[in-house]
Length: 335
Image 1 (cartoon, rainbow, N blue to C red):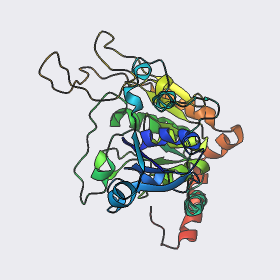
Image 2: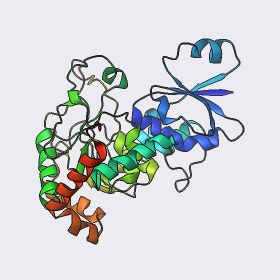
Image 3: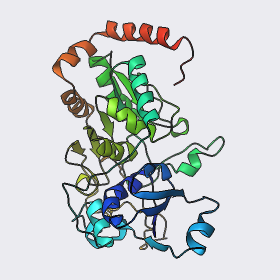
């Protein structure tokens, strides 16, 4: 049996899922990662192991003839030069034929997630999901009282100020539309006119299925949406939609104000600047993610059906939904 070690964040783990059907063509495979829920219930995965699974080393490596395989698409030469998509780069690293039309991200969620997502829509009405921040490790999120998190790296997050402008545009036009803010309490992204949920990251994939669409960045929400085949508006800056994104989405690409400086597009590894002190390189004028709020709103507006727009534009419909949810919950709902 073969065991594939997948490193990186939630998004990179999702990028691996299109390869599984080819890698497991002859027999099921093992996968070890920091995000085992990405691979759970996949019919071609024998076992999805967390990297800190106590028995994994003894049972699946030392006491067996398991072949351990690791590859990293971010070190693929064509990917670094911006010539290939990350999924194609991973195929290249593992000597697989890349089929752009067939190789799409996949998630196999349990039915309970979909039931909870349907219940959420019944209680909150039509909704979209937004994600404006990124980069927090699962280990940091799962520690008691995690420290305030500030993303450091090449630009792919939105400032809180710009995020609020975008939300205000949407709320003013469609006050009956619920806006789910995918952010964690320690990320300083509390936004007016949004709600934040206490839920596992993978649950947002089921929510996407019930949603009207999403606004994302180069992070997990965008890549889960690809697995759910949900169209959205994706904002790009220090990374490229051609290398990381999906053609189904409305991809808005920001302008780099530092064309003469090293920005490492589309490569997201935080490398040291070896021409100086070796400190991590940071853009001195990171404005590429300052996209126009009205342009983002126009993208969201195009996702909504005309009949639905009329309903969402009436604030009274939001009040009616709130009363309905209150009767349904009977004080026991938790968000």
